[in-house]
Image (cartoon, rainbow, N blue to C red; front, side, top):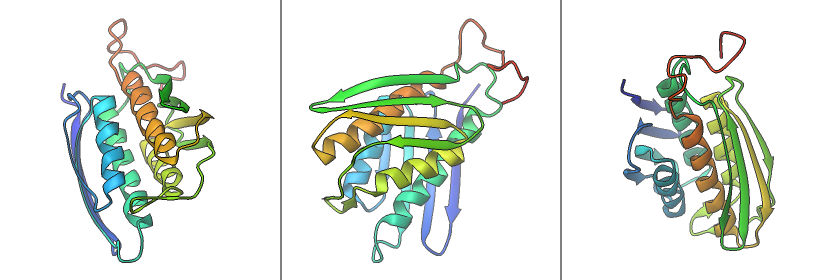
Length: 196
């Protein structure tokens, strides 16, 4: 069964189209107008093995906030749609991921209760044209709209580029584990409640 979707969202601030294939090979085609953000989303697709086509036209003459946050909204919606009723998925995933001196833990639960728990120390800095404070805004929007409980915790790190990149890669790897179909229970709902 195909687990892919395309979602489009247009507001006065952004025009976004995202195609997601959960069972891809990590192929990406990303264009947001913010080079570092493109790099993070490419890493996200590659490490999650998600095929991602993301095209964003945002009000970058204002700043990058709307572009980054709205991309998180639409990507989260795409995950929620492709996972569907969650029948057969592992549901949980976690990893502690190193990137040079940075070390980031990410844990995810496709709980249906979208929330981000952010225990990170990301200093304010412009990384290219990307405001480092927007990493948190992206993951708030993503977790809320995907309907996932997402914990992200920084265990080490000084370089802002490394900390943010380790976070995107860690979340992608945790998601990759969580959305896999469980071969031992491919039709089961991973909950005792009977609904997620």
